[in-house]
Image: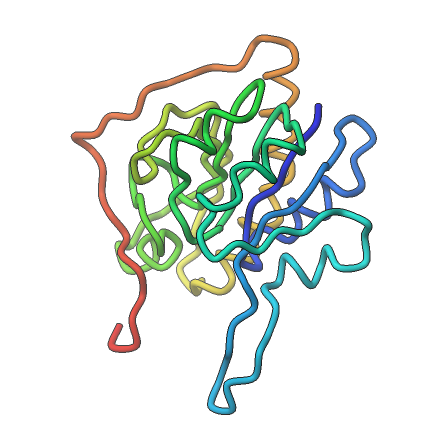
Length: 207
């Protein structure tokens, strides 16, 4: 299938690399956030996803607001849009573009820890496990139906950083399974229990 990858954070790099090397699916482009000033010296830096895709011939889009890139994305004719740690909620005009599905890889066991900082929320909450949820995107905040989940245990000495890296490692396998199921017509669609939802707000300096 033709896949468009949308992401910004480093957790999505293994998924991007897997898609770039896939023989079964064609990566048709990448959407990421604009380059931004970082640190005390405010040096302009590219997002990790752009840095990793830079050596390829892929089109790389960096709209300030993704709603302004609808026509460019539509022109790529994706069968599936895959989103991981992008940093913006996709509007309906984007969600309706792919022929098959728009999927989000979220770093928690939804509906637990919807939102911007699910890994840290799992640590703070004392969770014994977490994982990658592959969900069908809608216009809500991580509210779409779940296709599948891959779980890992959280050890007593783990940090947000170690859990982040382990989730990044299992994300490509989760996506591979999801795409295989979509192609074969066996993909599940399990509604989330919103009454069990918790929210992981964006981390601020005081946290």
